[in-house]
Amino acid sequence: MATKLTNRQQQVLDCIRSSISSTGFPPTRAEIARALGFRSANAAEDHLRALAKKGAIFLTPGTSRGIRLAEDMATPAPEAVLAAGTLSRPDDAFMLPIVGRVAAGSPILAQQHIESEIAVQPSLFQRTPDYLLRVKGASMRDAGILDGDLLAVSKTPDALHGQIVVARLDDDVTVKRFSNRSGHIQLLPENPDYAPIDIDGTEEFSIEGLAVGLIRTQAN
Image 1: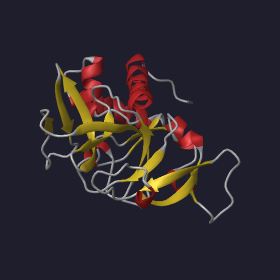
Image 2 (image 1 turned 45 degrees about the horizontal axis):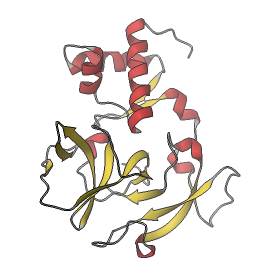
Image 3 (image 1 turned 45 degrees about the vertical axis):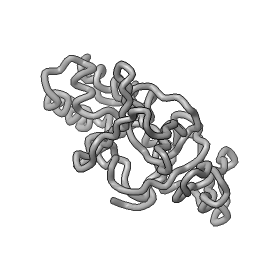
């Protein structure tokens, strides 16, 4: 990085790196403010703009998690992902199934749910995924997860508070942020038009996996 950062700017940059490493996604302005003791999210925004001006990050307007590290821009962009059988793929690429609509009561990776497979490069993700889930709807819009995106998912039955998960709730599979405060479990949307989902034990609930990255399939 050519331009020297102030101590506070370096703290903000480290906070962004830590969030991406632990959850697969950058933090919101409010999360940065809480982590670093700022009085408001506006202070975090000022530091983000300064970092963007110095070329340390790139900001996507209109999304609360629209932050990308400049150092990650050297890795293959989502557009570089190759559809299986269409182009010769890099030697280090591996195949991932794309899961579409999941039928009630069926395992996510059941053959009838797999639309196709694509070759991806490991450097696209912080943690190796097991499959790509095609996102339906806008409930996670403010986390930068949009309708039609391919969410990279690592299979696991466990999650930590604040992580973005793929969860099964009765007959539905949904993508939400996992919240567990003193045993009170909620699935939280990232869009104020949608209500949180309370898990009270009256429904069948399980975590299918953690979100570890995202592939944008079209310009939005």
